[in-house]
Length: 145
Image (cartoon, rainbow, N blue to C red; front, side, top):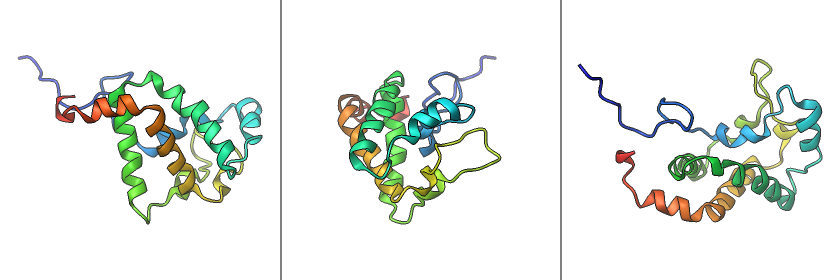
C-alpha cells in the first residue's frame, strides 16, 4: 500500500512540515560559537538606530533569505504579521538570552530599546524587498502547497 503524502508546505531542506517562527528571522544573527567573528562584527551595529537597523536587516535578512522559495517567505512573513497585529505580543522574549541554548544573539540585543520596532522594520523591509514573490504566493491557495 502506498503512503499518501501529507498536504502542507514542506521545509526548504527537508520533507518535514514547514512551521516558521519569529526565531527564523534571527538566524543570520546567531553568534553561537562565532562570538569572536560575527559577534564582534554585529556588536558594532547600533540596533536602536533605525538607519543602521534597516541596513542590517536588508543585508542579512532580505538578501540572505532569497534562497527560500516565495512560498516559504510568504509563510514566514505571515507569522510576523500575525505577531505584529497582537498589541501584547512579547517581542522582548524572543531576544532574551537562554544560557542552555545552542543559539545566541549578539551581546546587548536583549537590551534593545524597542524590540517591536525591530520586528516591524523587518516586516516593512521584506514587504518592500520581496513584494513580487509575496504577491505571487498570496495569489495561490496555500492548501495546494
